[in-house]
Length: 355
Image (cartoon, rainbow, N blue to C red):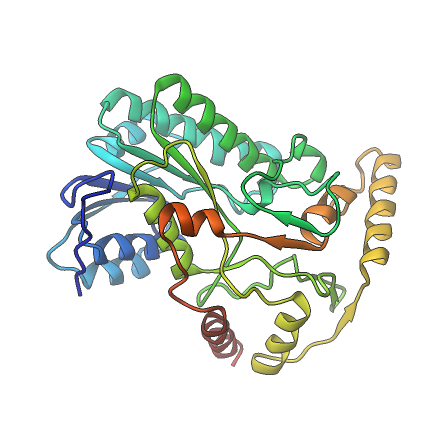
């Protein structure tokens, strides 16, 4: 069913072309669906040759009157970027190197690809808004008082390489590139930073809750709130960041209301999906263990990778509150799927997958 969006306070018209990169990803297909539901008829979806197109094609099939094109290409190829960016008034850039473990791979697939896309956009001179999807991973709680309240004014990690996470490093560098490039070339842009995006189709338990090792789940989150955002809520926030006029240059955190604690999430998961062994590690203990791992990694001169360290501990397991106030007041967003309903859908899907 089509729901035409009023264009009185929007950046684009219903017949303007919208480019969605990463359109076959976990969030991408929902972003396309949200655009089509709002009545935006021209959507170009960039997908990789190896991507599974079926979920995206299922979405497109429900909107036979729309003009959706699925373009196969690689953002590492400048010629592909020039072609897919042609005539695009709005670009929702979701593509990222999420599965890359090494720093060079993550940088190439998040930063170099974004630079290629921006170079192509500049040549066409038709952009009205560029939205890049970043992550809560860019934030650092180091040096802040406890308990910390995280919002868009919170500091981004100034030395992300020290956390030992390629994804965090690449996202910080990607944000820096977008802000600098768009300022120099006078391109209107918005940055969105989702928390942990969950929903059917993604079975993993967030590292913010804990990690599995040697067959036992180490519960590290304890009473911490988990910054969840249901995939449909996240997709709508991304679309609103592209459509809402008057927010150029702003940053928006995407996180739902009524966030569960790590302890409550784990209890519900065990009740509704499957039971497994877990051990709660108190915060003081996990901090000391991260410190010891960090020190041993330094003494081994990197032979033991710094997978756990104090910077990662403060980013993921330090007690933190989260705010979505700017998202609500500036974009008029509200979570259409409540946290209780989102968790029910997620647990049902996980249970079916484990059956």
